[in-house]
Length: 134
Image (cartoon, rainbow, N blue to C red; front, top):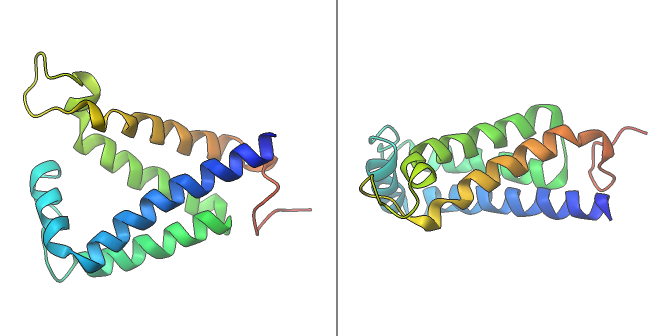
């Protein structure tokens, strides 16, 4: 059961990062709005976003396949930590009782980061990955 659960976690987190990457490629204007709203506009460069999207898609595909996990899993964690930091208000105050601009729907970002840590912690127990050591 554990290997299947880890596979499901790996694929679901990889798909999330994949979808974010595709969004940067096919709808850079949306990615700019997200950057402006959550990341202080740090990624609001129309020519840069598709390139970041391509990189993000590549990392996501490697993650889902379970290739180069020692390097890719920390990259996936950093991507998701960046997302978590962008919505930190929604983690601290999900209902907006004290902070403005929060949304309880962003709270699962914390769970995704926890999932990334689980994947790193249990790399040696995964069976359904392409770089599994025998």
